[in-house]
Amino acid sequence: MKKTKISGRGTELHIPNRFFKLQTSDDLDFSQQEREDHTSKTQFIPVMAKSMINTVSSPDLFMDYSLNPYQGCEHGCTYCYARLTHNYWGYSIADEFETKILIKQNAVDIIKKELGSANYKVKPIMLSGNTDCYQPAESKFKLTQKILELFLFLKHPVMIITKNALILRDLDILKELNSNKLVSVAISVTASQDTTRRIMEPRASTIESRLKVIAKLKESEIPVHAMLAPIIPGINDTELMKMVHITADAGASSASYQIVRLNGELPVLFESWLDHHYPDRKDRILNAIRESHQGQLNDSNFKTRMKGSGSIADSIRQQFKLAYKRYYPNPQKPNLRTDLFQRIKNGQLVIW
Image (cartoon, rainbow, N blue to C red; front, top):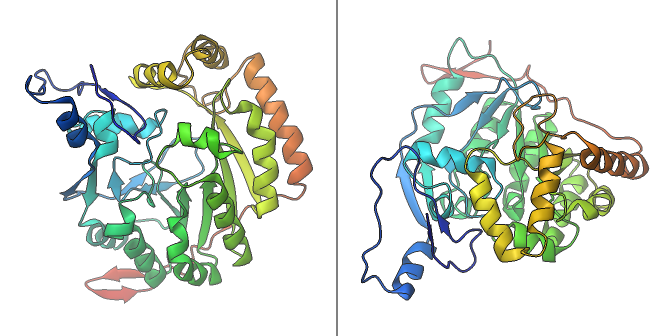
């Protein structure tokens, strides 16, 4: 494990890929400045995907399918569970997750093929579910925009979750989808103030801009949910009630939260991040997370992994419940249509 200072990134670590027996290392003559320049520059790597639509079977997730145009993410959230999947592509879950972004350049063609299958059962597809579909790479490659245009053409329902204000670029497409009740949006909000957000998500949109996104979607009558996650005891849990308040004021029609959990090798990354940003609180934060997950930093139990258990988790639950009752007195969740879907078969639209 190597640490290299990288400005504007979520981590300074390089954690070797757990699947590789042999690991590469930098030349000893590679200067610190050259190393920083090399590792801080984002690389966009084109790949050919074999499949795009993933079936989601977890009983505590509100989706049946997910779809991810990109692998890796520049937002820099050290706690992100998607980091672990970067190993499967041959890269580190740490620095390379943020600097080596895989672009699934054949995404639209693969989706067309999968939607055209006679075995495909139409249900809303979540964009994304792993890495953010509106991360900075989207401004250049526009895969999400092309996928939304395909869904609009086929009248296929889609759900979107993002923490990036770039989504407003596609507002016209979202309006058209919404005219047929084919879209809902979840905006991830992790803090009530940007000082916290900058530490947690160094390259994501500001909290103010996300609230403006919620307001703009509300103005366009597009259903918008506030995803207040992750809640990290000792960091942003004291902001939870304010987060509920400001997202409701902005126009979200519903909200939910999740408590952080650290799978696989994420604790190594997270502890290093705490050393850098919260050294005085490190032990207290880690102990609070453990107390919320039955003594562990991770919990894979479907019944408790999202909301946690124990006194700290109960306190967070009560805070949310109190704020939600006050600021979301009449929460509404959309029911997207599936009956309008038109398949493509042999290059032709077919209504089944």
